[in-house]
Length: 324
Image 1 (cartoon, rainbow, N blue to C red):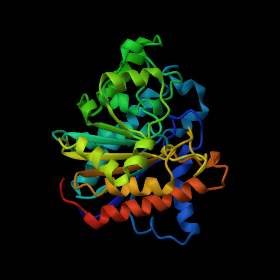
Image 2 (cartoon, rainbow, N blue to C red):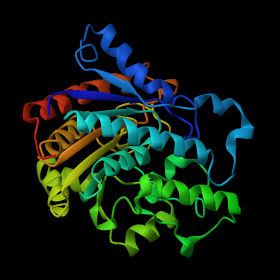
Image 3 (spheres, rainbow, N blue to C red):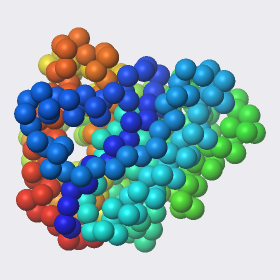
Image 4 (cartoon, one colour):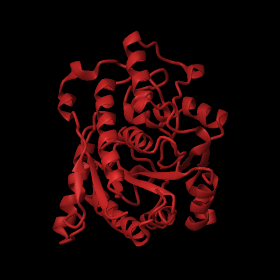
């Protein structure tokens, strides 16, 4: 691969709290204020967003899955842009607003590599395994893993949804004409500590591998990363999605949409992610859910995330693997 390309996805239409769209720029302003040239030396491209719809309540479409049709357009753009990045032999690092964008990242990777088996390492306090049938909020940032796995979870159904919702949800699952995008055997969730019973049902019934914060502390970051990578040994390529709420909101800050206590420190996060990104199968890395409007420590979350991003990028560029 020749270059690291930054993919800016400022969409926050899948979140329940406004401000995640500002996370990408917060990272960039943090770099500027610190005389850091990270963003000037890495070319970037933008994914479309429809954040203007946030102020229009009529755009919600369906109570149990807000703005599904807009999300489909976002996924389509990911497919177009990531295909170009990979065809040019470049490596994408995605900077995303809310975590619903991750479904588009996965769709884009699979669209570019339809015959490769994709493994997903989800570093997150949440499982994001809801569907319109089970979501308590209707916010799509709680659904990207479920949509990528093609799981509706009828067994735990709590919502009655309209025919229009079913049609839009199925269209999102079938984006890029690939269904499902990933298999439950090919998912590892690290840092999980805040789930609903509907998500626990999927995790338990499909034996989705999880690695808790306590386990990482017990085994160490290197062993935990190797544990995750070994679980995905049958995958051809691997994507790592890092939600900043996997970090402890007291140790770092509350600058994210759904902060959760008892998470990773910056040091633990850095060690874990850099070790994961040493894999020759890595095809994409993503940071998501920075929300500077919620940061009670001024801009601490962005400052922390930028330090992590730099170290991860250095690890990736030191290898520039050619496995793709």
